[in-house]
Amino acid sequence: GAVVSQHPSRVICKSGTSVKIECRSLDFQATTMFWYRQFPKQSLMLMATSNEGSKATYEQGVEKDKFLINHASLTLSTLTVTSAHPEDSSFYICSARESQGSNQPQHFGDGTRLSIL
Amino acid sequence: AQSVAQPEDQVNVAEGNPLTVKCTYSVSGNPYLFWYVQYPNRGLQFLLKYITGDNLVKGSYGFEAEFNKSQTSFHLKKPSALVSDSALYFCAVRDISGGSYIPTFGRGTSLIVHP
Image (cartoon, rainbow over all chains, first blue to last red; front, side, top):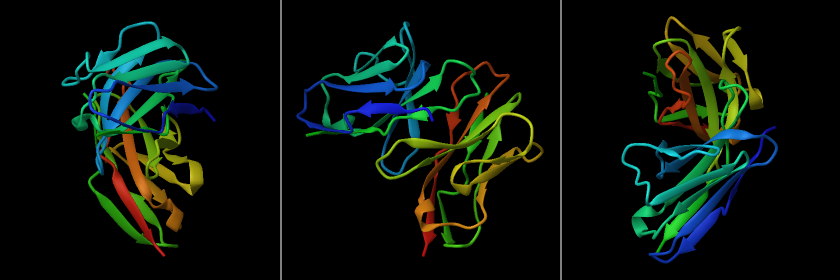
């Protein structure tokens, strides 16, 4: 089946640090990738949608300059949390959808647990 | 517009008993419907989907779901629950006719299977 690899799985760093999270589709081409944030015992909050080669579309309330998304190829998207602060601590999950057929399911990475001290 | 509701925050069931996790949806056109499962500290795993055709959809790990257009529901079921089925389950919908290619996820239902 389709595999999405997300790295790192866990990050612990000091306040003010910028953190980059990678999301790769290993065996399929992903025209569209999604970035979610999940708080404990809560649902997924869609942060942004990225299409290969174009700027990401951010959901209302998500700071573009804070959460930088790059989708440079059909297999890689990155999320950079710039100057992270404790309130940015969360579980971040990416997902990717195959380019052929919009009725295809999303394939999710295993998430990144970000802890800002 | 599209929306999805999972009315139960938590479902408790004894091992070996049948389980049902409820999902209802609202779309202006026809829906694509999905179920995903999330284990602790992991991403979501795809279980099954309804696109068209047979209303009863079979998926991974013995799960199935029934599409009911009149009740706008897509409940997840399994005939005999296992302790290992304990996880967080998400229903998602996308309105085929609505022009959005982004699915909407429900808030999730925690399934707890007791030994």
